[in-house]
Length: 347
Image (cartoon, rainbow, N blue to C red):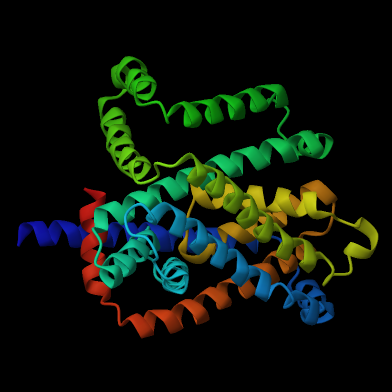
């Protein structure tokens, strides 16, 4: 009884923090906004163009399912890609609609382990690897964009931040991630550097590392790594293309002529920010990051930046809710059992 009460308290606190983040971020994104101007901009937006990226967005999610299949092949070959796509969309819908942190990352392996009769732990390990892969590519793309748009980025950095130090920090982080594939080196860092500073942090890192190792075990063939890298490039490219297409739905594109690199820059900024401060469906946080970046990088009015962020976000959000919701009902998922998984995974 006491254990159940503790699990309920933990989930309640997480949900409360998540909702507080949403309220604060929405309030901040609307600060100093002229609502009449915002309304006028949205009225002149070409929603025909804004809706064009929908097939590309769905294709990006399908490639995520393809990449996941490569990770799962050593566990069980021949898993239906559409079943994996269904699980991916269910995960996105859960992250968008429900204020339970990380629920989508638990729903995905839950759906597949149940449907394919696989170990939940083994399937969940591939989700850990997927997140690490996405983080590596996010940092890599940041480095490329930083070099390409260095002048613009340097101009928006605070005066006390040295851009060269930022590049060094990014390279150091990538090095740590890559050397994590060599367990003795990673364990040496944890035991000799992290543990003397903080025992709790070292224990958490070791816990993550054990899941990471489990995920690596299921990816044994070098050809699988090549395929994972290729699929990752395709996924992130397909994420950026809708942002680029949506530029043309707004009048500012007639003057600024923003390109695919600019789309990647917005994708990276929002990706890093949402990772640091996640809210259900990235509501509020996404709007702040994208609108602020557009104002500071391109000098457009805040209302225009917010209008662009809102249009991009709502199309992605509704698509995830609708498609994921359809699959959610088809799979007849019990949220209660998933909530228990969420509590257990946090311990």
